[in-house]
Image 1 (tube, rainbow, N blue to C red):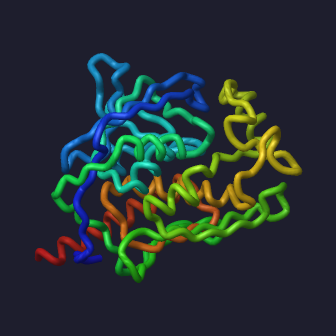
Image 2: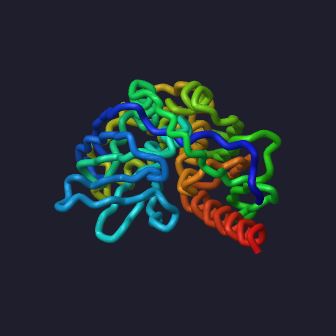
Length: 293
C-alpha cells in the first residue's frame, strides 16, 4: 500500500439534523442527532443519556463481536447496531460528525439506511479543507475460508467498489444473488440505501423466543417465509444482496479513512468484514513504516 494523489478535502455536515426510532433488539426508542465536527474528529458517537455523557469513537479497536450486527464499546459506553448509520455517513463522504444518541442501540427504522441518508442530504455538506489520506490497496488481502470469505484487491480507479455473492441456494426465496456497486453518494442512495435487513421466519421466531425483537413487525424489515416476505414486498428482486453490500460499506468505515479498493465478499458477515479491516490497517501501517524507514 502506498500514498496516492487522489486526495479530497475532509467533509462534515453543514447543520445539525435528527432522526428517531426504536432499536430492533432492545425495543428502546433512540433519538439520533448528527452535528458538524471539525477536521480530524472522525465519526464519534456520544451517549448523552449517560451522566456524564461518554464518547465512543468509530475505530476498529472499539468493535466488539455481536450477533448479526456491529457494536462499538469504549470503557463503559457502548453503541449497538451502528452499521446502517455508518454506511450512510461513509457513502455520503462524511468524515467528521458527532452523533449524539439517547440509547445504546441505533434505530432500525425500516431496516435500511435511507432515513439517515436522506437526513444527511437535508443537512448539507461542508468541506473542511484538510485532506484525508486514504488507504490504497496495492496487494490482495483476504480473510475467511472456502465457505465464507472477503477480500480487498487493487482497484483501477480511486474510491471503493463493493461486490457480494449471497448464496441461499435451496433455502427459501433468496437463492443466489450477486451485485457489484462502485460507491459514490449518488450510487449509494440510488442502489443500496433503501435495501432492508432480512431474516428468515425461523430466525425471527428464534429471536422472539429469547425475548429479542419483540417490538418488530414484518413491516419494520423483511421477514422471509418459504414464498417471500411476510406482509411485505421486495423493493428489488435482489434486495437481500444489496443489503449485504450496505452492511459491508458500514463495516469498512471502521478503518477510519477512505478506502480505495475493490472489496469482494462471498457469504461474509460483520465478523469477517471487521477482520478484513484489521488486516488492511496492519498492511497500511507496515507500508507507511517502510516509506519512512
